[in-house]
Image (cartoon, rainbow, N blue to C red; front, side):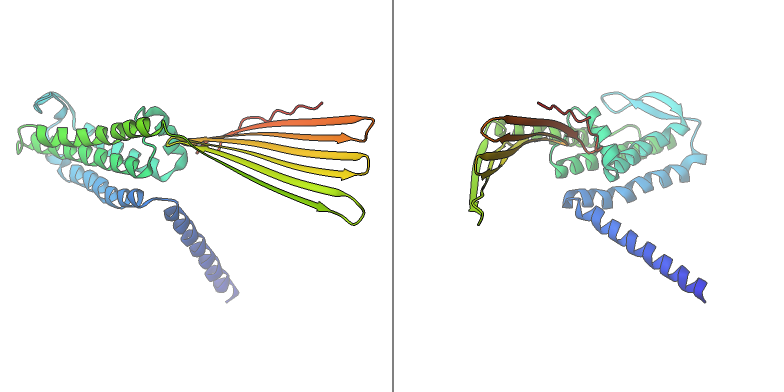
Length: 284
């Protein structure tokens, strides 16, 4: 009985974890990305099923390359029919894993910045490869003569046009920079005469492609002839999937005779792969 209860508790915990992970995954996706994943998965599965159902009926050589007018230019073994569905599956998997998505985006010179544009582009890629795969099978069976240039070039134009259009849009809009400056200062005096002052200055510069936040936090403690000043300067630069954070911590203590300064500088670079550069420290 205890063993059964333990198994039920274990299954319940596993179900709860899977449910939470699923909710978290979809909460991090935009509507366009979710629509792509929901629609692309059955289309890709249908490609594999369609090829497999007709595989034995096909000749050993099937169309693989096509001319600009859609006619067959070259043939390969019928195993090549699985290449395009596999490519569609790779695109789908790359949208499920942030690490693979970051790796693939570095190879894509038309890397979309907007997630919805990226999802729509991936959808058109899936549709284009599905149409070519279906046409390869039909041409090999003699039911179709060539690829339809209208369908092929329409899907290709949409696949390239979306990210190119986004690039042009951001290139024009990116010239405008919005700068905001916020300052907050608080001063308190303790009962023993110690005076504490905290100042925070935040400067934000944002464009369509990047965002830079400079934040300076200063804490000053004055007790008689002794003055201690702690300053933390943080500069955060975000551009696409990359994030760079530079931090400078400075501590100054002055008792009227001797001044001591300690300074530590730290630089961290992050991406969707969560890679971090070593820290660099400097003391004076």
